[in-house]
Length: 418
Image (tube, rainbow, N blue to C red; front, top):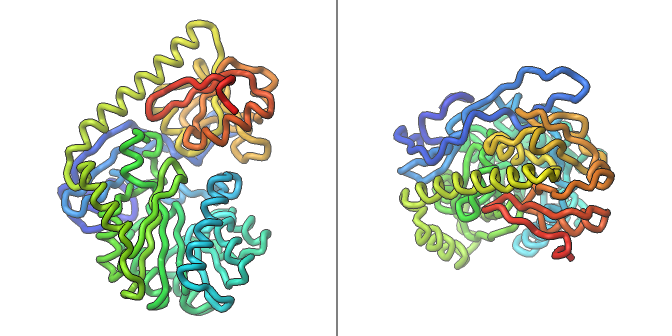
């Protein structure tokens, strides 16, 4: 497979007869946002198609965009701003600490470490840590006292770490393992960097949850692969790793945490076979899930547009809440613009404030706009953390009702939120 461009062979096994799951549209890069103070600049749009490999069952994006465009230095996402992620990473630390009986001399490396939120748990626990992060979020990590190498993970970064720190006891990759080019190269470098008795723990948005809840909004060009346990196990075993434990976690609308080791130090937990059986029962071993998934996405899109059109016809206003990367897919695929959604609001301090939504003429403004204007409805673009958002918005003074867009749109009345 080329570094970027159309995907013609499976990213894991090289099979050249890939099957189309769904083609959404051409979509803009989710992290390139034009400032409100400037004329609209030319955007780069890329085809957003999911493909499935019939040989190893990997579901993957059909086009790999230039990483320099997808992950610019000023990449706006920071993991520390989301409570569910902070709690998830604290739980991951506790689990690894118990599993490995971590001691101060143990060395932990986090690939795609962002602002250091995950590694801060290990550092505060008294362990040696190093983050590898290509964006300016690395500076935030450094300011928090988390040693970070500001670069993309690859052969050169691995060589640098081996020379400066030696091999790692634990390597983590949380919500980044499916984002990095050339997964076989990634695994080869992880294996070089990890001690023989160490563990590699990955967290990835989980294909089965994506299918169950019709998460078409997660189809965008950061996400190169959509892992099931079966497909990630295939990749790991190909590189001599043994998957010994798996956990379902709530992050990003449903993720999978996979524990693997180069050897047989850890006995296989029953969770592995249990989840493989569930995937098989859902038909992920074959293609029976694809047409219902397509039909469900189309129905969801039409229903959401109908909700918004009906509200608009009554003269009511809808503001959108937050501008995560997934929101770009939703507004562009459904066809929402500033005539239907005049504003998206973000929490104070967000780097996205003062810019337009990618591909749309919808301004992103400070959340204060929501409380000043009091629109009748708030569309939760970060719907997957709606249980956290709605009480907070109500507590801060929002009096309107909430629209949850996925899997099928529904309205939650303000009076129902506690």
